[in-house]
Image (cartoon, rainbow, N blue to C red; front, side, top):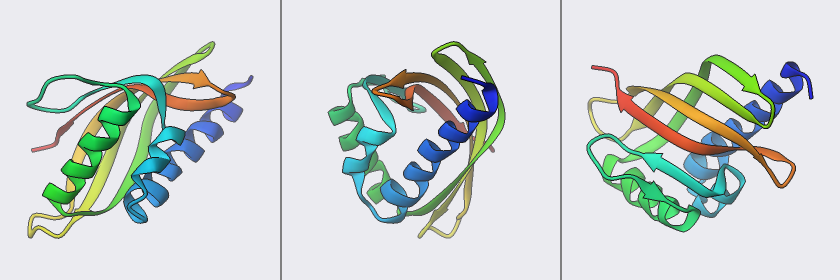
Length: 127
C-alpha cells in the first residue's frame, strides 16, 4: 500500500472522529477510530486501555470540557508497513470562554480489520 493511500485512509479515520464522534456525539463510532486494544495517555491522568474504557473517557471528557467541535491536522506522518506514526495538532471548539483549545498529539496507527485506526494516542495542550 503506497503512502498516499495510507494517508488518505488515515484522513478518513480522523474525519470520523471529527464528524461522527465529536460533531454528532456518537461515541460508539470510536470503534471505527481506535483498535480493539488501543491505549490513550491523557495529560495528567493514568493510561486507559481498551475501546470501552476509551469511549467512557471521551464521553466524560467531552461533557466536562463542553467540546462542540474538533479539527485534526496532520503535521507529519511516517508509514512503517502496517504501522504509522502521526504528529498533529487539534483545535477544539468548546462552550468555555477559552475556546478554541489547541493541542498537539502523537498517534501510533495500526491496520485492523482492513482499516487504519488509532492504536496509541497521546496529547497535551499548547500553552
